[in-house]
Image (cartoon, rainbow, N blue to C red):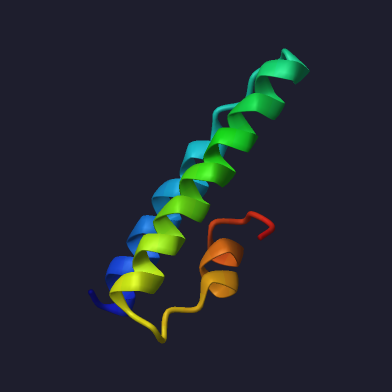
Length: 65
């Protein structure tokens, strides 16, 4: 995979956070799920490419690692 592919994935995860829910509990749950998905993808990408930077990927997703 290329840097462009990684950026595309991170952007897609970031965009998923745009849909807000007025219910704070559901919104928190959505953010937790988005974070878990990003962490799982980052782990798989790290296995694919040992030079992959998880912290940078998470930052591109606008999530804390």
